[in-house]
Amino acid sequence: DAGVIQSPRHEVTEMGQEVTLRCKPISGHNSLFWYRQTMMRGLELLIYFNNNVPIDDSGMPEDRFSAKMPNASFSTLKIQPSEPRDSAVYFCASSLETGGFGELFFGEGSRLTVL
Amino acid sequence: KNEVEQSPQNLTAQEGEFITINCSYSVGISALHWLQQHPGGGIVSLFMLSSGKKKHGRLIATINIQEKHSSLHITASHPRDSAVYICAVRGGGSNYKLTFGKGTLLTVNP
Image (cartoon, rainbow over all chains, first blue to last red; front, side):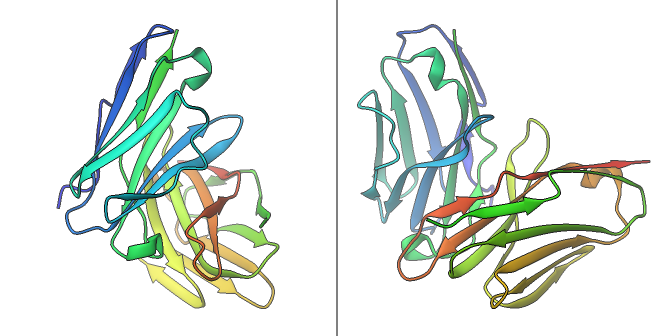
């Protein structure tokens, strides 16, 4: 298996622009997580999907952030409008077990820079 | 909320040395993860354990549930082991959320 695939790997955009990050989890995995990593705050959970259904989005910082999982093989994280403080590395991770109890498999991350 | 403390924060070693990174947490957990992140790179899951000890190649992870403590050992360290090692714990019950440590930056010099 190719592992968790994220795109783009790097994104540089200007403040106010819409940003869409994409994730393809490992086939057959039932849990999908979006994390954000910054120097100041480390890794933070943004949202958790179980069987394509959002279970916990309490980590999504503001209404500017939204995430979808239209099917088992694809998820998006959208920021609209983007702000400089959104600059971070965004990781997608998937897990085989329902409820996210199992081992986590992370993607390579999407490094976002908002100017 | 679980507090996760890692030590040391930074560690420099010579190639071939035995490395130990420690992780302590404050509240009972259902599982503990050790993650590896190379500079500018992705995150790789090294171990997930809830008791005892696991070994993979030159890496060994142990956990003592009673003492709320885990260690990650690297035998015969190599420069390619240079990375940030992150401890993360999952609470008991149905808590899927991980609490992350701040990470330990390991540098192995040739």
